Length: 173
Image 1 (tube, helix red, strand yellow):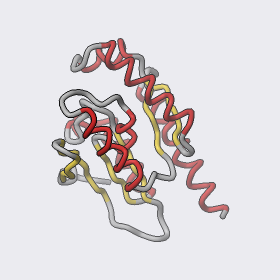
Image 2 (cartoon, one colour; image 1 turned 135 degrees about the vertical axis):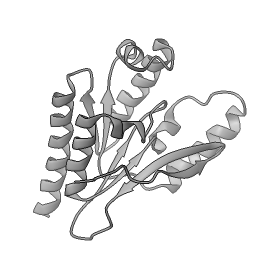
Image 3 (tube, one colour; image 1 turned 60 degrees about the vertical axis):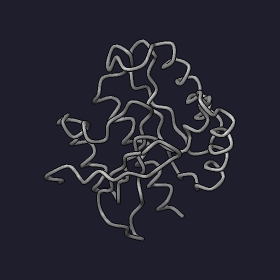
Image 4 (cartoon, helix red, strand yellow; image 1 turned 90 degrees about the vertical axis):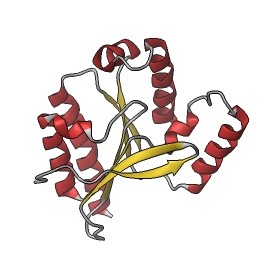
């Protein structure tokens, strides 16, 4: 059980700093689990939600947990001005330089629902990004789409099932 939130670290991606946290140490006998959020997320605020913090604690018991604000899959989103061409080239480089995770979970929620929850980006933009992520889940091996419009307990159960299924597959090898 984690008594306090882990320290937030930052990796630079172009002119953006990507927040991440690491819980636990590398152990060859246990998997590394990567949890990544989309734009507008906050890795520190998640610890203020007791049920979600408990869920993260449960994941950390399975192996080292790395939590990112975002992952290289976001490089598939349409580049926004300024410097669109440079961003496309940079994102292409990221996609080819950073190894893909064995498993990634896309928390899928309609743009309108996401907007009512956080009210940060316009619903149309959120829905457009949702379609990109759904496409990634449909075409990338190991990327699983989970319906995040369900109650939190159902989402947690679905994500936990994905993690356990991956662990079971790994242990069978």
